[in-house]
Length: 215
Image (tube, rainbow, N blue to C red; front, side, top):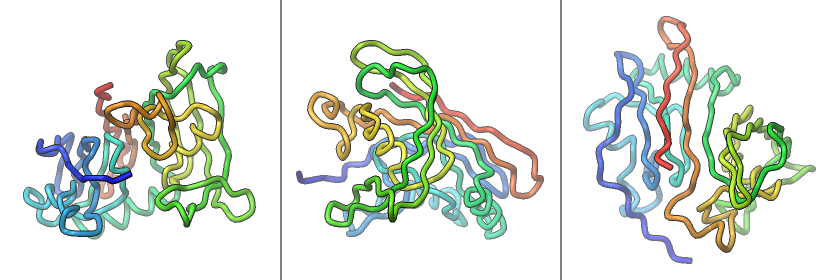
């Protein structure tokens, strides 16, 4: 399946900025950082650099995922925020629409993940070699066809939420890698980083940033 990168033209939506950090609502279809090749040079961090020349990467969201991202504006902020992510001191909440009715109200998926090398960038469950990956989830509402659900990753593996939902039989709608048939036939991946809680790298005060999903 051929892929043509066509990022949305709209400028980044800034949720917050100060002398240490900038928080953005990333659009679906926009790379967080440049991809391989000149055709994938347009990305969120390059767009931010035009306004915030010192912007530094802390974490990423998949091309297909929208929502809240934090960037550092100083090396100190980058080190501090990166440590918070590595030590799991941040709290991320995602909103998703998944295929089918999820019967239970809450649950946890605990399945280790590893890159599926022959099929990159796909990831897969591997109980022998995979890295620990844990996702808590809570149903918001469900119908026979789909469920709106909040996902709270306790780890930060690549494609974690997408693989975990597919593995329990409820792939995220519009997922080009892990959904099939009607579940894949949506204009975008129905996954949005709804909120992010962290401590400000200078003051240490807890801060929560949120952005509503467009689906």
